[in-house]
Amino acid sequence: MKDIPASWINDVVTPRPADSYKGTFGRVLVIGGNAQFGGAAIMAASGAVYAGAGLVSVATAAVNRTALHARLPEAMIIPDDDPQLLALIPTVDVVAIGPGLGTDERAARLLTQTLAAVAPQQCLIIDGSAITLIAQKHLAVAHARTLWTPHQMEWQRLAGIPISQQTPQTNQAAAANLPGTVIVKSHRTQLFTPTGSYRNPLGTPAMATGGMGDTLVGILAGFVAQFGLNDKTVCAAVYAHSAVAEEVAKRNYVVLPSMLIQALPAYMHQVAEA
Ligand SMILES: NC(=O)C1=CN([C@@H]2O[C@H](COP(=O)(O)OP(=O)(O)OC[C@H]3O[C@@H](n4cnc5c(N)ncnc54)[C@H](O)[C@@H]3O)[C@@H](O)[C@H]2O)[C@@H](O)CC1
Ligand SMILES: Nc1ncnc2c1ncn2[C@@H]1O[C@H](COP(=O)(O)OP(=O)(O)O)[C@@H](O)[C@H]1O
Ligand SMILES: [Mg+2]
Image 1 (cartoon, protein in one colour):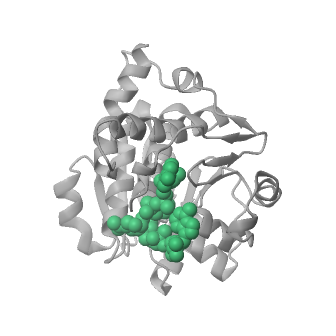
Image 2: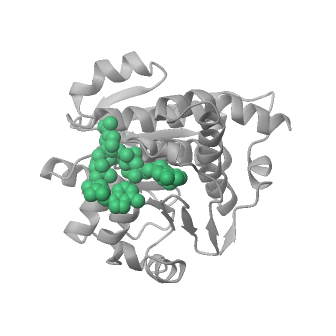
């Protein structure tokens, strides 16, 4: 397992072409946020918008509409029980499901519908409650372009490896049984792609606050939407999330997701101009 090279973020985040428009930078759909966890969907969508995704939509419980619009007017919203959602899914580049989704029957239905509707060329990010549901209900996922983002407890549920036995070796063996890339989040996150394994050398305990993983989902979605799905882009997104947090933590005891999101465009500018 090798550390993500510091140079990769510079390879990925480069100046934008002059003859571009919002369509150049991809479409993201975040599916999540029940009545209890609406903030998770807002943080994920914000991560995608502030990372530079061209267009971001959120399918969430209707009760979250006002809060989402007030916090993030750049995002479009569709109630998660709207039949039009199934027609929206094939129109995006990245579908990210799970932040704040919950694990009730309504959430399970949304998840199975989404898994069935995603097309092979689309990137699917599976996070949070969606991972817990897949583990609980033994749902089959065969989508090759999947990014899994479990924290250690979600990984225990999904892979069956107790947290105390999660090593690069055991994690790699379990990741090989899943399609796509697995990002096992911890204070030093590990990534297992079909072709390599990487460790994130960055991150700070100032990041240990609710919503930090939801934010990573958005940044991953924004990076993949703009820069394409490959190991370098995925590693760069994980690296950028922690690099921005380390920067903000130089002046702050705790880094809230909203602080990280706010600081992200300046960090990407600095990287692109370097
Ligand atoms: N403001 C919001 O709306 C928030 C919503 N959230 C959503 O809440 C749902 C439940 O997720 P949770 O992760 O809170 O609950 P989970 O029950 O899935 O996981 C938390 C449990 O895992 C244990 N754990 C062990 N190692 C861990 C590690 N390295 N990192 C994290 N947990 C570890 C914790 O002690 C705890 O018992 C998800 O859909 C998530 O997206 C959370 O992101 C928190 C913020
Ligand atoms: N002590 C720490 N050091 C470095 N990174 C951390 C630390 N604690 C949490 N993180 C990062 O914060 C994120 C937490 O994700 P997760 O537990 O899914 O949060 P949530 O579901 O509340 O949004 C992960 O990216 C993890 O790597
Ligand atoms: Mg999480």
